[in-house]
Image (cartoon, rainbow, N blue to C red; front, side, top):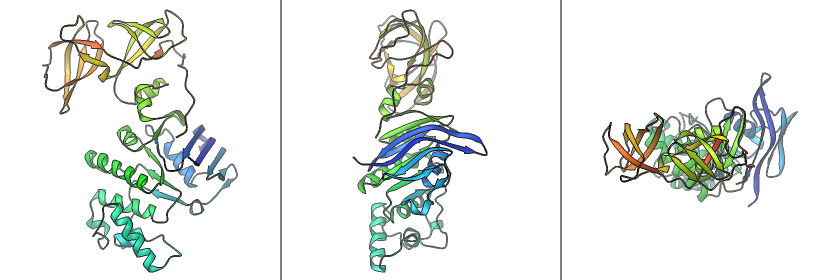
Length: 361
């Protein structure tokens, strides 16, 4: 696939303060990618730099192979052929839905404009709403109008800045899937920034986890969850606990709940003290097994129950069990570890796990 966007070792500053440092990424045409991280990690600054709203202190940004940003030069946003969808929708209250969608269209006939707006109303599920005004729409409908307006000029790239954060959780999850489908249907490349990993995973072909201005891992949602290459990524993505252990061989770890062999090899040497990441789905029921843990907390999730379990040593685990077996608080349950992905990090301060290079999507 053709590469539509490239960021080469970019650095951004605010009043001399470093906001983004040494960030590189590649985005292929037609893909949808996400920058994910906590507030203040620099993800929105990266999006603003791509859009042309923030200059670069170092590095280079290319769109379709053409340099649009480098130190001392920033191509204006209106010349980058981008679409943007903002958190607050930014719709014009005095224009109806059709007027909002067609607002930025220039150089085409009225008939062409009407057809394009009609097509976008259909694609975004807004048929029959062209004559309504923004205040007559729900939050989800307003967000669809904002997306349709961004898609109308047929941009090379759509940038989405926390577009669903003002919506309730159920609507956010449904709409994020719909937006991905719309972008894929039109073969439109999208870059989303969000602090919500469920949103990032629902939309992204590739997701980049950011922390303190740096891109820690650029990977598929599956690999971010099962193969985090950084202690922060492992802790930030999903749920889980870290259990202390000892490295017996490059791919075998001993902990208080047994010896575990996995799919990774570590070169820290026999006897190295480590932390083993265990996800709730790594802990499975084993009523007849020797290892018992006490239920100290539970959260019903419909088909499953998330249990917080206390080990004999006082350590805790999270476990996700089918909800047909409803264990009471204080009950002792039999468990075992079933972890195909062995994810460990050195316990020694300052000792970092090796990081795989970023992959292009």
